[in-house]
Image (cartoon, rainbow, N blue to C red; front, top):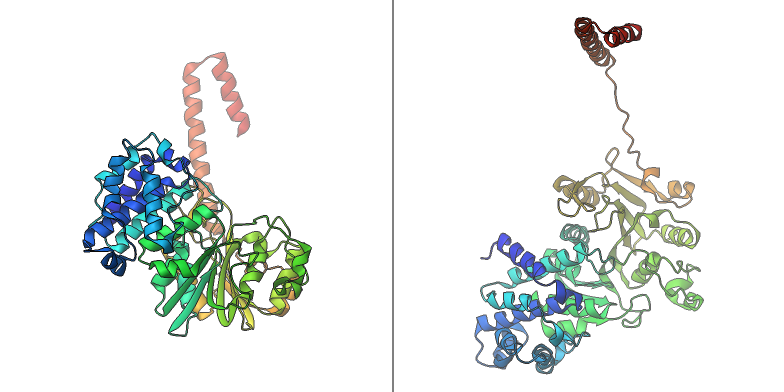
Length: 480
């Protein structure tokens, strides 16, 4: 078993040795993924191509193992490009996984990452261990570079979303769709946590991130046929890849915060927006993701969406959409998170839980004060272990806890003009009690210390017996 410390160290080493290759797109991830997959095949020692596909879902020709390609790269600058093309031909279901949009692999003069990976041996890594390594590199790289769109939520929040959604599953088989799949990490976390048999589906807008998600899925042991059939590249807001009638039991979603989008008035003819009658503003697509997600949510389904806190109270068309969702009773819970909970962003975020079945009351949970600073990323806060457990317990039992959670009626929300800002419903102000007797006693003790210090000062000044000392003595006496 490979220790977590060893995996962490490999991840750090790769980051240190790969600054130039990262600047050329996702090349470093491609090299690491290829190395992991190459060593995984070497570990099973397949007798032929068919055995390799049966056991691990892909095949790399022996002449294109990582070590042999790296060796040829010393004299042939096109070696990696040829290797990635060969992988595509040999594995047509993964056709575009290594087909980089950065064709200048041969121009990378710094071979330090390539040399380092050649010294690594991942044949002893289990699927779980190699998956953990790839996850660590993805999270560390994108978090450190503050890439607003590209970064998945940190592991802890992915686990929180998975646990919340898992508590809603009542069937043996469940379909899960992430419309903003990014690296696929949130889907993979749900697969790990759910007890039911799951069918994973995902969509990703960015071509680079989509390729990385395929690598991540394959490294995690998802078979090539599933990756090919169930994961697509597309813009969920345009809803081009999935039929509008496609329904899913669980929809987890962490969309890019306040993304600009094409709020074309013609979209008001789209069933997704026609009933509400307005479109989210062009500068903030947050509720466009929500409405599109609800369109694909099954009758008994649950959707969890992470949004910036501003989505709770912004006015204009967003206020009208919020009113629409509240009157339809689609909002099941509002959970505020600590500042900076989403990796590198020093902003407050909220987790909104939606259901197709009407909720009589909305559960508000204020966990914004249950964070602890990340020692390496100062803008990020983790939920404390107690805070994490408290959210789950409160949500599952729909409990009311003083200054922490409340079940709020729609009538009360109407009175607040459909504003969901949590302080309107949960009083977090704690009046500090003052012990008058103890305070007076403390002041008296401090006064005695001051008087004693004054006397000692006057005695020292008298010994000096200078005009300046006499003037100082006079000033101290007046202050009394």
